[in-house]
Length: 241
Ligand SMILES: Nc1ncnc2c1ncn2[C@@H]1O[C@H](COP(=O)(O)OP(=O)(O)OP(=O)(O)O)[C@@H](O)[C@H]1O
Image (cartoon, helix red, strand yellow):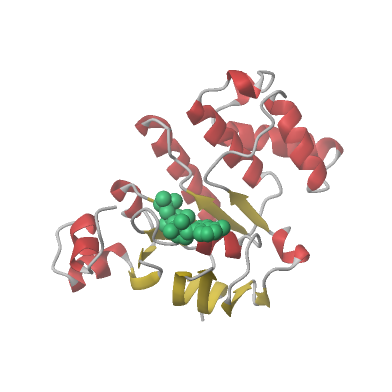
């Protein structure tokens, strides 16, 4: 039996008169890399923010680790990387890491070890002492990713983590996702990049607030007789992503 880590149960969200999410049902299982794909404005960020505990649904429920969100204890077990970096630019990377490590209750040797490990994963070890204002866009994304990993979360939610990151580094970041997955971390990632979508264990295609398809990349391509994910998405009625 697969262990469900994320359970989205009939979730809808309305802002004023605008219904942004429409009756979404989805299960994400332990150790999966699940990709959420969809055009701009489809509702991906709205959904992942709910899963990170930053928003609540208008209808329906989200359960993480079998418990109803939002809940402070659950939030501590989730790593979240938002679409825009939430960094203190007038501090160094190390000072940023120190700040977030303190929020997660990391101290002493453990803190130092985790800080080194996460900076190693994102290849920023040599830039620990640099002011974040002197970081490039891609370096800031990587630092945000390092911060989301600090407390070794069981569920990692990444909203377009590789925007502004060059292909070589993107490849190495995806390799780290794979090793995190092998250690049991469940990863939910939103993306526009088709090549990344193909690396996910399963994909969910979202359009106009509705989940229009979910399955492995192979299943989605087979069901639509498509040669690639982009064509499968278009066949499901998705707009250009
Ligand atoms: N706080 C809010 N108040 C009103 N409307 C909102 C709010 N947040 C999101 N929306 C609207 O909800 C819709 C979905 O936005 P969302 O950011 O979830 O899309 P997305 O799929 O993540 O897009 P992108 O790929 O561009 O990030 C958009 O029309 C957006 O304007």
